[in-house]
Image (cartoon, rainbow, N blue to C red; front, side):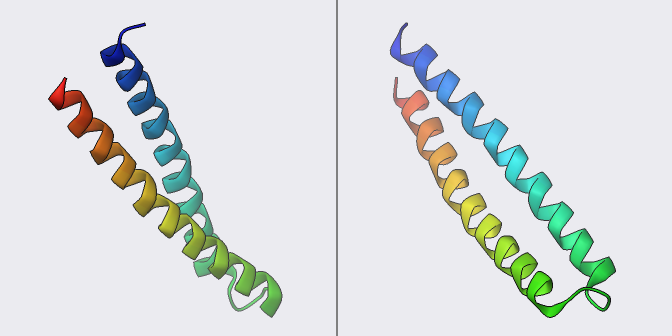
Length: 75
């Protein structure tokens, strides 16, 4: 497999995981918006921590995608 094909496959995988993270982030935010007053405080705190983790993961994967795109452009 050539380096270009390898980079394209890596980019596709990163985009897949970015979609999973965005979907999970939106689901957590929607759940929190509708259930924050009914849920126990530990569950709400867990949801907030999950949202923060997903936001940080989004930033890191976005940086990896930008780096991979730059590497593809350099080839």
